[in-house]
Length: 349
Image 1 (tube, rainbow, N blue to C red):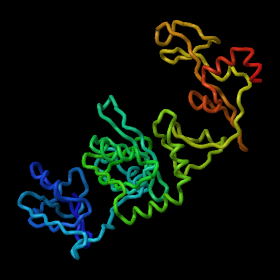
Image 2: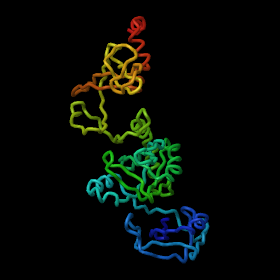
Image 3: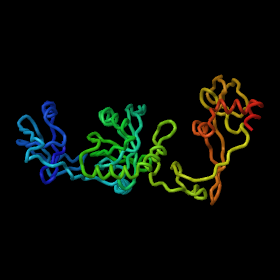
């Protein structure tokens, strides 16, 4: 637990083993208690940054007296937060050696603007859940939750609430260089949804003023397959002439006129129904696939080139799968049928 006194001086209190059930029944978040008989000890410095010069250990020899909220001794809601801005986190990661990065810890107060369902990662035999969070300076980062307890509790709630843009207070989180800079939970990370701090109200007011921007960003940061995309919230429009200067693997935004092909046969390719290998053949038939070494039927897949033009240049882009079908309002099978049937082709033209 993190506890603070009337001067908002904070320290960590720990309960061990068999004493935990007794304290779980008595301790309530953001309530006032008079605590006597706690044992002070030096903070354990190996994995975390200490809040104070000592930590408390509470056990069966300690006494916990609850103070009612209307009592004159009840403390007001907390206001002190030792949070780090996303810009400072990025600078800290850039200035830290890789071997020392695991020792870094941060507290953040941020808006959840996107949330993916949990998924299983076979390589580490664990589940993860990803969030996209934004601070009040419109800086956004991906936040990966690895702890099963958080996924089942706060993660489940956020999956249902993220379209309302809740504010979270995440304590003792780590950072990594995955996808530039991203946030990650650690073994003792805690996440609170809509904590009762005045700073939360400031963020909620910002959400109210910028809901249209947040809604647009939520859509831009979600792929058609449901995965979250690493895009900047304050992303600027990149001229086509400057595309070559963009880093490989990074996403960016262009505004351009799109010119589509005139031949319907250029809106699809035929691929192996098992492995997806495309082939240079005009009609559906069964083939011996040279990629997966199996006999399979060819199926159509939506894929086509478009010309993109702005005031400073032009380039060729590729549109495929669901995005292409959405633009054409046709499935890949319907595109193939129209392109193969002279009557339908005549009607279309």
